[in-house]
Amino acid sequence: MSNNVPPRNPYANKQGYLPQSQEEPHQRKDVEKATPEDPSREGVSGSPAAASLEPTPNVASQETHDAIARLVAENADLKDRLLRALADAENVRRRAERDLNDVRQYGVTRFAGDMINVADNLERAMSSLPAELRNDAGPFRTFVEGVELTEKELLRSLEAHGVKKLDPTGSPFDPHFHEAMFQVQDPSVRSGTVTTVVQPGYSIGSRSLRPAKVGVAS
Image 1 (tube, rainbow, N blue to C red):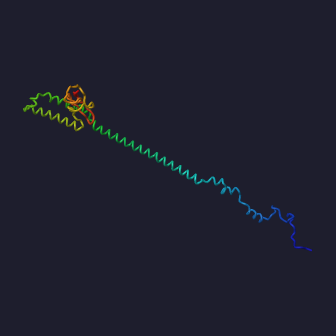
Image 2 (tube, rainbow, N blue to C red):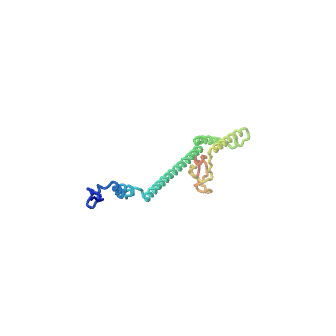
Image 3 (cartoon, rainbow, N blue to C red):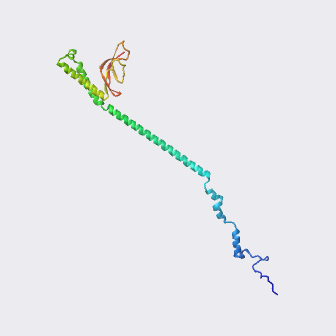
């Protein structure tokens, strides 16, 4: 007499279940689907170590702040250098302009020093003439007028180049333009006043070309 009970699997245990190694392939696939993902792969995307590799907002903000601070410092340094360079260039320009003016004004100093000796000789020539000859209306008068005009023209030419004749009579003594030769008692003027001019002086620009030799009231 036969029954419909399937034959017993020789590898099944008493309860009728197969060991894990003997389970059907489709059952193992279901188990693998139910198992969690590989911990190593989980650590790549969601682990704390992976999260620490990504810059936090605070760190990024600090780096940006430091970069801006460096740029501001570099900008200030470049601005300071530019201002210093402009100041140096302006000083050089002013110095060159001043030197050029000095050359224009005092470039004829040596020539003017020689010419004032000529003016001194003309003045001596005129002062040595007796008064009657200077006032004579004859031919000699023409010669005297010619010498006087020559002296005036020489002084005018010197003055056109910044050279002026100094006649400090009655003015206070100035050691920059006057040379005291002697002192005189003169109660009619204040002490230190120039009363006598022995030799006229000359100036060029704001400098003394030759000091005037004078007598000063004591």
